[in-house]
Length: 161
Image (cartoon, rainbow, N blue to C red; front, side):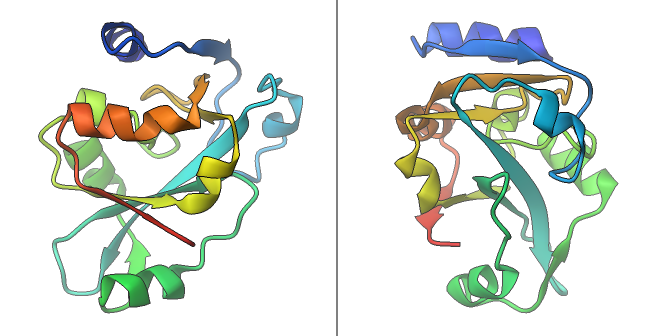
């Protein structure tokens, strides 16, 4: 799965670096402090869905930032947001818990998940996301996030989270 991401980024002419590390599951993992992200901002990703809805949203934001789900919920005009189940991750993004990222679009280009991107990510020159596997991170320019998503006709939106 990682190799497919690397191959697709090369096809899109997106420069990137790979950082291999022990498995990272959440921002609370002590392992995050040991990883050298080479000046890039590591990002976290939360798959959520509104109550009594089939819609799914992947919220992408800097690792150290708290996700204001109420703000996202209000922006989406939706009912209360809750975290999606593991089966939703597997079925809709092709990954297990801990590996969600904007790069999942490469594995599941037909996904119906809408990507909600925190505008703060644009403030960083480089960002780091898992390449469909939480034992590595891919570092690339933050201004390439849109190129990746648009290459797969993914639905996305930038908002302040």
